[in-house]
Length: 295
View 1 (cartoon, helix red, strand yellow):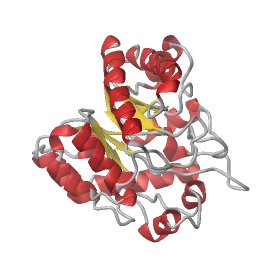
View 2: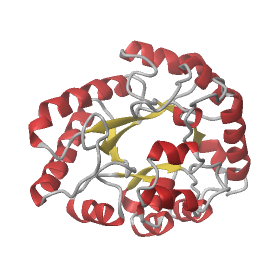
View 3: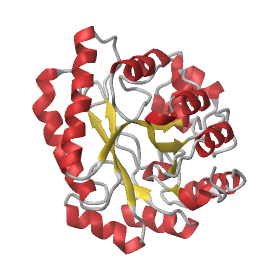
């Protein structure tokens, strides 16, 4: 078990300042503002945010990271993998994101399996569609290896790997490595602490995300969208919600995890909300204070 605070391995994600790849999410703060806030708060690195947010060439992405002294530890890449007719588009998107990430270091290629580019509604997959997804994981692994990086799968709401049954099927049917996202697993029906204990050997990367299940239940019931749930505060400061973050960290640290913890508390800047980082940064700072108590 590590004897140092996990804050020394805590990095940021632009989603905590409302920057998101989901269409029509809200006002997006510029990257220099967000990176400056991460640096000011003492975060040790960042994920890239939406594809192209930090730049559209390896040089521009590397330059953004270097300017603020924040290594890029991962890039979130939504891909259509269940539909074999979309393989060329999948490969093109994968090579583009992998080239940007590979130029900045050894961050993780974070795969989210979406229905389509517009984040369409989930539906039950056929056995062949599951097989196509699993074959897609293998192909992305090969693409990533060519750029000196590794893929991890992100279980995520509104994707095809969301629920307990989805997670179980992927664990049992594929060899893909995992990103353990505490909030998305919890809301989807998987106990993140149990996942950490039982599948530690599959986990390469961790997202710390708390959630208020009273709001999440309204999303799961179809009463509100994910964006509406986010506006209502479903993803709160770490320690303020119902996710057993302390148990997850304890499980990971006790088994020798030495990787990054990515702090995420999704927000959406909409309506008459101030278009500045003040309130978001205050919430991130609150999370950091809580996480500093976990050793």
